[in-house]
Length: 261
Image (cartoon, rainbow, N blue to C red):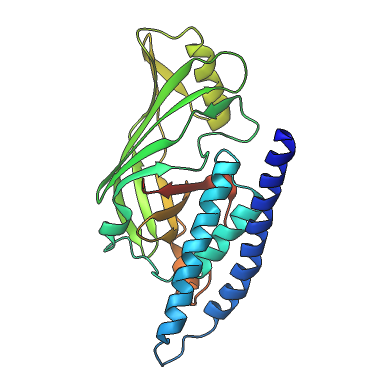
């Protein structure tokens, strides 16, 4: 009975998410149309606010159900949210929205098919000119030993919907003086990310990280969706001005940040 109940709950969540997808694409089509000269009616604003709240709740539930992994439906929901984002965020001025403390709800530190997984939610501290991501990673199989992961960098706005992160070395550190599986786990992280780590002590390793560009797909008071890239995608700003998504969504490079409740 318990297994049947869990399966029924899971199927219900999937059904709810698919219903939201249908509503999302319908709404996205209406938002993509040329803007009218007259102001929207109050009743329309109320409906849209309610929809955005429900859509964000559906995304939160989908991430929780899949342990942070973005399903195809959840990624499509992010695409639609990006297309109809009402705030049209400008990172050069919207500091109050994209700075603060966030929880990284997506399993963005778990590479597909890699030997390492993100252990729990990561914390991200963002200021108008810096970013610090702290998390823990462990082996996908075998040992439960963990390494703490820390990434810091200087942050700046490069265009209408993009942030540039000039990274300091990515650090992996074992708890205490050493970790039994430390070196093997570092090797797994290196294989999954393509980074080259060097030992700076018996329990700490570092790797240089290239400058990253963070495209802002969605931004409001509680949800911040970013997509990282090693190349600037500033040219996508023209598409956003036309009411279209300026960045193709890649689930493997998404960062879904939520403000703690």
